[in-house]
Structure formats: C-alpha cells, structure tokens
Length: 131
Image (cartoon, rainbow, N blue to C red; front, side):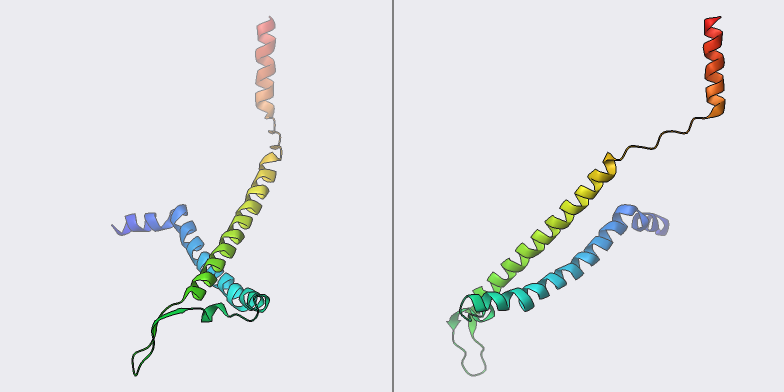
C-alpha cells in the first residue's frame, strides 16, 4: 500500500496539481491585496469617499452585549471585483502561455540525422533492384 501511495503521489499530474494549488493560493492573496489596498481606495475616491467595506444594511441594531446583524453588501461587491480581477489575470496568463506554445509548435523540427549505414544499405538495395 505504501508503494502504491508513493506511485500515486509522485505521478506528474498530482505534483502539478499541488504546485498549482499552492501558487494559486499565493496568487489569490496578492490579487486580494491589490484589490483591497490599491483599487478599492481609488474607487472610493471616485465614488465620493464611499468605503465599500462600510456599506451594509443593518437588520438588527446592536444592543448590550449582542452585536448588530447586517447584510454587508459592500464586502460582497469587493469580493466580486476581487474575483473578476483574478479571473482576468488567469485568463491573460493562460493566453500568454498558449501563445508561447503555438510559437514553439510552429518551429520546424530539426532534420533527422542521416545514418550512414542506412544510406549505404539503401544504395545497395536500389542498385540490386536495377540489376
């Protein structure tokens, strides 16, 4: 069972998937920071100083020890913007990689190196066919 597990884990697809998940998580954090720390303040200035994280509909006011119950639609809007930027970034990256693969595929394959023994045997065969 240990050998099967090792073979499963060491397959290329599993390792590639693990690397993709780790890089994707880090990429998501970077994009989230970009949205919340760079884009949202600019959008806030453009919308007259509205902070999206403060936009909410209060359903039940806070009283005593109980905190308020609110629908925080501003955070939802931030998350939608976050998602759209991540999706656009991944699309652009895949498009770039696809273009690079096409250019690599268009390169002509190197000419096969002729084997002198095969050439000699081909010449002998052709000569024998003539006779």
